[in-house]
Image 1 (cartoon, rainbow, N blue to C red):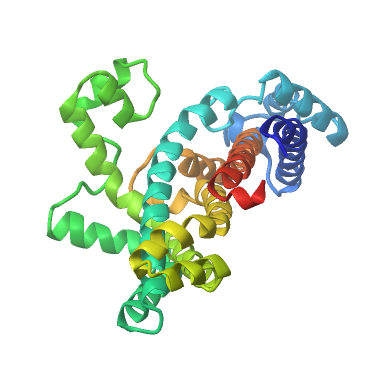
Image 2 (cartoon, rainbow, N blue to C red):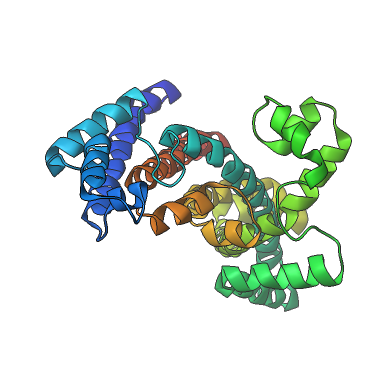
Length: 338
């Protein structure tokens, strides 16, 4: 199937799934116990003030009418007003999304290359001590709780060894520079565009620890998948032919086995990307990272239905786009899929 036909077929599905996710999230948040109007108006608000707030927020309307108004606003870019920030939800979510994408994007790069390296080592020396070491390491990475790993890295690498900052996205001395810049919102990229070396170093050192924590589970998963896929590929006919011709095992692994084995790994990478983007609230809270996860955690604590629904839609769209990109890349990596 051509790329154009794939896009034409998948884009309507992507939009439909995103709307469905937003609809389900909106309905669930409306059914939760509590009153968003009371949170907005404050604990000392009178009944008249609460009634006015409910009318302003549209909470006095029947649920079906609220859903219709929400879907229309979603299509028009009007996602409502956040209850806990009093700002448009679309502005809040997009501003926080950039920080989360920076963190998760770097973590996915670490997970992909680190997982592939561990998987290749396990497949190359299957049943020998390198395979045992990599298998044990991947088991630890997959099983380690996020909060425990985050605190461990903070205590060892940040507090004891003083190698990296404990929290934040950059040093406080660059606050004015970042606030005045009108770049992409990705601090390292903006620092490169501004040719600001100290800001780049500061942002790069701040992202190391949270990125390692976010990358831990995906690294272990990708390592296990790539090892299994490589072992299966190295038993196929074209690999046996290359081995019979006399190619060294290292060349066989890199040239004949790795590329056909990347299909399942790329599919898993899209899955863990969506998982990481929607589950970074613990990491972001521990490292004081102003991303989408911490925003959703604050929204849940205040029963902020518009913010929760908006963030859910954005995560769903990002996950669907990641899957679409992987579907486009896989036939390039493995020509057999064409």
